Each structure stands twice: as C-alpha cells, then as structure tokens.
Length: 340
Image (cartoon, rainbow, N blue to C red; front, side, top):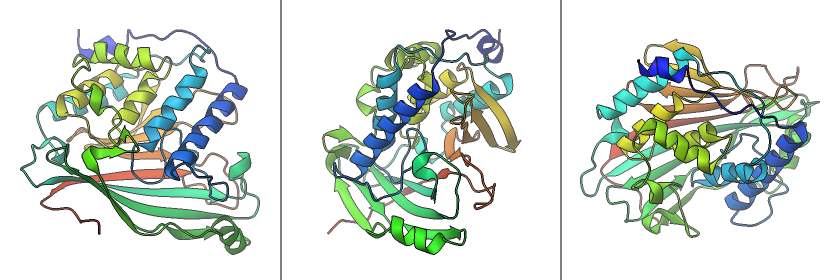
C-alpha cells in the first residue's frame, strides 16, 4: 500500500466547536501575539493581525500564540473534517522526499561562520472593520514589513534579526488617509537590528521546538501522534507552526511533511511546476470561517508562503487583496550584520 493510499484511511474524532469558542480562542491568541510582539506592553492603538498563529515580523511569536488557542479549546468538540485528500497528500510526500534528498538551502550543512538567511515579507490588511471582525465600511490600508533572520552555523552562537521599518503600500477608500493616520498615530515601526544569544528571546527559543528535535519521532505516523497529544484537534496547525520558517533539521522536517500528508482537511488548490498551493480546512462554517492557503515548493520541501484570504470582502478593498500574506526566501550567506 502506498503512502497516498494510507492517508485515505486516516480519520479524526467527530467533534464540534461553537462560534463563541472560536471567537474566544482567537481573541486570546491575538492578545498573546500583541503582548509578545510589544515586549509585554499594551498595543491597543496598533492594528491587529487576524492570522491564527502568525504575526508581523520574526521571533517565534506565532507558535506561542497558536498554543494559546490549543490551551483554550482542548477538550472541546470539533466539527468533522474530511479525509485526507490524495492530491494534497501527494504534495506533502513529494516535499518530504525532496528534504530527504538534501535539496534546498535549508538543508545544506553550513560552514563555520556562515548563516542561514531567512527573509520574511509580511503584508497585512487593516480596515475600519478589522477590530470588529466586519467588512470595511469606508477605509483600509495595506502594511508591509521585511524581516530577516540570520541563523548561525553553530546555533549556540548569536542569532541576528534585522527588521526594516514597516511601510504603508496601499490605501483603500475615500477616508483611507485619515483612517491610516489615526491607526498609526504612534507611528510605523522603525529599522532594528538585534542579536539573540543562542537564539533565545526572553527565555524562549526563537525556533520554538528546537529543544524537542532530538526526541521527536522520525516516523511520520508517530510524529503525528506526538503533535496530536500536545495539540488535540490541532495537530496539523501545530505542525505548520513548527515548520513556519523551515528551521527544523532535515530529518525532522521531512517527518513533519509526511505527517501532514496524513492530516485530513488539506486540499490542492493549484499547482504550477514545483509550486503547489494547498488549502487548510476551516474549523467553522460560520462567518469566521477563513481557510488558510499554504504554498510549498516541492523541489525543496520548503514552505514559501502563508496566505490568509480576505475575511470580510467589501467594495472598499479589492477582493483579490488577502487579509495577510507571509512569504519566505531562504539562502546561505557568509556573514550577518552586526548590531551596534
């Protein structure tokens, strides 16, 4: 029996979650993202990201936020999700094989002094309906930020995060200028360059699961059970957060991709050559339903983009502008900038 055939047999418990529970989980998640991104300070004047588990900029904030959701809804009843889609499973399995073959910058053994350079470009839509989870009424804007993570060959050395100042790249609606000025009354973020000894940020590793890599199962089925025990009902979600910046070692990342091939709810949206777009099933059929798109380069086994489609379309913002897009480019460099 092939692995694609095997994933057809995977099932999950038939459970349900209410719209109120989902809304509560999302609010708790966003509070954690806002708190962590601001170093514990209030960010009430700043626009909020609505992507579950992911946020503007680098630093592992997304994973911590994702687990906040799991903590709230663990033990709740989830809506039934479909069986694994064979086409989607095939994408994950091809990506897994590419990792095992050692293709792609993320899996190359770095020489002393070299760095794995992970560039993250985040575009976030904000509208006058965002805070209320509603469609825009009169205005919106698109904010863009570029952050670069430099991971040293010896991961016990300093990790470097360079973040460019965020910028507003598009305005929508007749009241866009006034709305943008009000939301950003405290100003846009500024350029920053920081070092993180041993890749630790406030006592937590930037690479969220790195202390677990040695003990994580390398068998995809066993690894799926490992994540399911820690994030009941959200195993696929937790795995994609662990894969967020393509940082796990090759054998672990390959097992994670293999595990995703066994997770129900992913469907193949499109494919052009090695680039495949998968949709992750929503946990709700109500107004909060908002399936996330995951773009994978099957030739390298790397995640290259997360897309959160526009959640509340209206005539103010063009329908093809997503709520959030996070794109990654990975390369190897011989040096990293030095913080002053």
